[in-house]
Image (cartoon, rainbow, N blue to C red):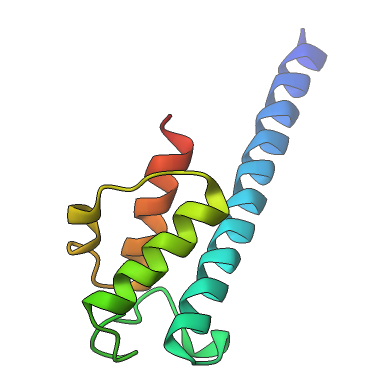
Length: 102
């Protein structure tokens, strides 16, 4: 009985690690897109980086980022939701919501 419990626990841990890795890879790819549009180094983009204020992006840049994300991940994001995005983390969470909640 104990072995079965350990197997379930190990399976859950592996699954959590896989999701964590996928999330990290996803965030890295989003960061690459944002850095390319903003013409800044990826290391300058943190979770709390304000996309418009700190990176100096305007609504046209936001649409460029949105289009690149949609092409890269094969999703369609409601354009109105992009205007709710303030930080990189907000953008990352928005993309995750479309990818993982299908």
